Image (cartoon, rainbow, N blue to C red; front, side):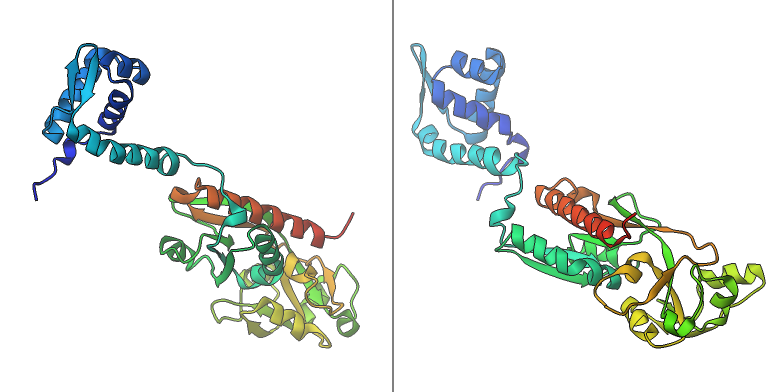
Length: 312
């Protein structure tokens, strides 16, 4: 097979060919393409060299196509149709007929709090689709995005590379949570009661300390941590009926998934707030499907957060 000179293949040549087939004149094709006649004639010369065929022959005022031109005309029309209708446009995402998979990475507590409503909303809008929740955090989310395992990820991300796009969802606060039938303290909980009450912490590194302990050490005091777990909602289950407390993200404490009648109190020490964001790869951020998914997830998460917060 003869080697193809791909350097000579130019989309403008296909447009010129198509216009010459349609108007059968260099002047008519030039006017249609908004080109000067010399430019159209030059493109025709390149087409003849590329395809090794005269393609069009002047007969009076008309450019008559050759057999070869007539043979390839439907194929060139098809190529231009694909470019026009499928490659170049970034139309709106047809979510109603989408039958693919929405792949979302979430932390443990984000999946517990937002997962059910996310599933219902996505299936309501895209009844033929499927939803896949995958455990993800700041440690593995970037690799999962790059590998195509997830479309986007909800979580806490401190430092991100330039190829990642971030969308702010909400600001999370820390609260103390406890069964006040057992702890029997005033609210807001005072520092002495906070320090005296055995504590449960969520730990990702299998340690029974966190940044809170550094703050307490700088104050010259310490707390008594008796249990560490990687599961946020294990904390709430462990607190009921026990004289213990935990410092948790506000949404964990206010979630209505568990009916445990625990008490919430602002902590007696300064614990910084943190942002919960949604990330995706920057190169995919403008894709219509991802734009739609991003907007749906953002709206749902923010609405859920507002619904869980106490009404003022």
